[in-house]
Image 1 (tube, rainbow over the protein chains, first blue to last red):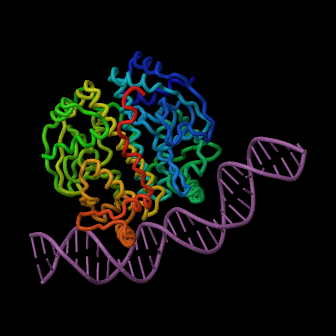
Image 2 (image 1 turned 90 degrees about the vertical axis):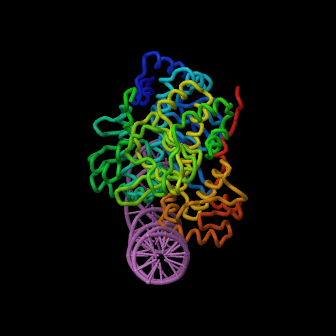
Length: 243
Length: 243
DNA sequence: CGACGCATTGATTGGATTCAACTAAGGTGG
DNA sequence: CCACCTTAGTTGAATCCAATCAATGCGTCG
């Protein structure tokens, strides 16, 4: 099992002891597999477990009345799917598996107990939640004020950086199980226009993409094309302790 | 001082005892006034206090290289400005006062202590943070997949609902200290187009707006025009306790 | 009164959507 | 093994929503 991945994100922001890790590990009641395109959690549902990504990619999404879909977040190993269910009862959006993935289920009540006793773990989890929020804010900026070229550059830059943080990047090559349609839903564009935009980026030799793979050719140029600043991800270990 | 407002939001999601309220109140080291258009917290800053809105409106925003601004959240009384600073050291965006407003400052360390001792308060605060996140997600949907007409309808609907939750709506009339330029930055549009869109909404008799006031004429029609579903705000008191 | 901020309106441009067709790759079943 | 179908990607032409450029009205304030 790819358990180490579960801690990569938490450990990026806090020092965990062996006991912390064990305590966290014990929360996991089971790990189940979800096929691509199937919902991990449905909109409106009230699941009894909190879900944590172990393998594969998923997306936080909302279907609109007019049939269009907006992806609000891409989830990779180490990300919580629905941490907010510890305090909120009902999903206000769905989570769909973008690739075949495995998901750990965590008992809500057990998690609740840990949140009330283990301050270090709690802080790590809260921290990771706040990083997720920062990512969501970046998403607002992306769809709100950037053009197609910048949007695609930014999202690919971000996913590269996030995958790198959990050790899933090898020599600037990332497994990217996203179709152009999914990219469109994540950037607020249409598949057709994503296609044209990717063609431009390809022409500019910023990356190679296809067959579920992304190879960054010029990370600096890509970052500046997308206005990407990793600051909101690298929130590690500021002010080690007392001030 | 308009202290009661501070609890309106927290109490909407959790039952607080008199002691909880007192404990929270004690955290407030002082309340300062900020003039409209001045930053409450600057991008990149590492403030020593957490800020809480007491009066007036503010906005979470980011300036882009090209000079455009994206507002990621509107903040009203009861909202935290920078709760994430309890765990994250540095602002990745700025907070600006949209109207003259007063802001409570909370000592970070004292808050930290409370977070580790008072589970009920902590949960209430976490809850409020998760509501903020849900609001941000709605913002992504708004700028990502809705047209101008829907965007404006949605944001005004949301602000009406949020203001109502903290008791600041009287007979469907809300104080709305937003210029069309601010609305533009919050919806990812241009001031000119906001103007035309408002003209349309006015013509459709959905609301009257101007002079810092918003009067909703047909809340049902406005909500359906904006695809607004209050579900993500009304997260109150589900599953009272055990299951 | 002039300067400024904000709202409004017109004319024009442009980025992205829409509609539509077509290619390529993979899987399935007769 | 090849017809058949599905899914993903690509390309072209026409259209449209919103941006841009530009000018004006209007109230407030120094």
